[in-house]
Image (cartoon, rainbow, N blue to C red; front, side, top):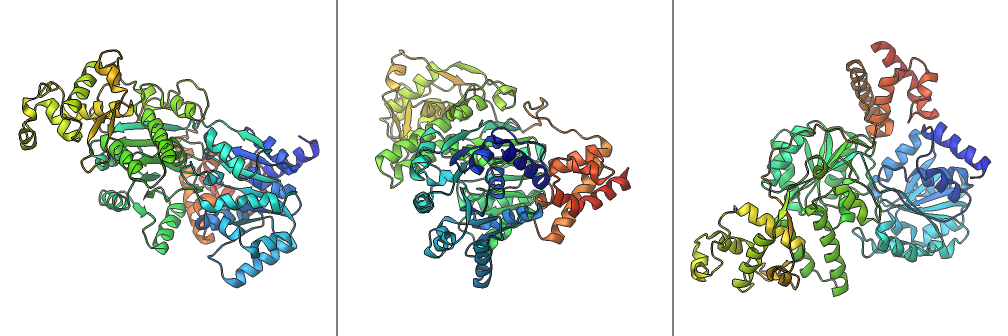
Length: 606
């Protein structure tokens, strides 16, 4: 790094943003972009992506333009920058004509450091002309995975952003995302014409997140048990597949004493925005949402992310769970998953209007997700391997903390496959399992399936056990679910060697769903800041002060200070502004704005 540039970048990091040193590759990225280079940055949520374009924008002459799809969050992003003394604004459809004119004048005159625009706005002739007439420091393309047609958040307008390379060839561009496998990475580079850009790929590991996937029984009841036992007063997100399930789950949680808000694309825009704002600005709220919610959410103290339905891909799962624990403190990623999830996802792929190539890609992504759910080994190893990163067992996921029991499942799988075959591959899971268990239903008698040789050959196992075995057989590619009206089970070519005894099958032993218990084993890979009784009292007092201050400023509480900073203040007990200056997250502007109040609180409680 150029010594002069390096010193200026570090000075901005410390005095403006309040951080003592760059993390990981941040310093190299800042130097590369500030020097005029293009970059493609993959960095996990909470890894500090924003600083990678904010600091270069402050170092270079002109205005930094941030392309973001997140109109609803631009106000909070701008508020956060203004709190640290950075001149920032946004241009989007929520503004009046007069306000738009004012921001455009600031951009032209260079009286602003950063401006946020949505890709649709950027593509308008008016906006392109504005940037032609202005001095632009850089273009930052946030959430760059939205350009990938193979990805989980495809936005057609992102493809047109290649115009930036053609129209502003001398302005550096930095594309950033938290989630992209090798295929998506290549597509980002190709579509945004970043083929010559330097790629910075950070570790995808989030060691502070504990991954847990449980057998789905009564999903909502299991969710309630999990939240009340481990995260009673914490902020969290619960993802559901359908709008109806979002509404029902939010109602259920509220009825059971947990403050929950719904969020989905079918809601009135004003109500949806109000719920998002409450989640960001208040504490101890659980957002129950479809995947329409979450991209770009900067709330650092989300302590858990739950899934009541199986995500479509590991990319989606990683992106969604990554919204927990952005502050580096412990967070949980919990999922309840069952056979019906697999059947539903398979049917959605089969019934989609996508072409066969795209359906194959979707099926491969779902297979990888099923593999993560059914793995007998460390979930983190499996997750990171998907992104091409090697690792060892983490000691902080459910399969590490309570290793699953595996067994030779060849015989039960053979019984299952034989039964699917004997009923002519024309019946759904429930009927097949009834035949296996020898249950004399009217439907079985109607089809004379009680006279089959396989009738009752699996009577020693409960229905839930057989569902677990069937789910694993589907995950292993031995059985598929037809998208006919009956969701009939069909054998694949891979089933033949198992039936003939030429291939053995290892399965995960079925475990009855149990009430969640707080894990006693501490997580590894991060420093959890334990507070003494007196420090905890100071921390709680600071949180109350922060909430009052945030309300007075009409911003989210975390924009004032994050929990991690308040914890550090509680431990350090600074008795002067000079002592407070050394705390992570306290830059010069915040020191001036809040330092006296914080020191007064510390002195009052000491």
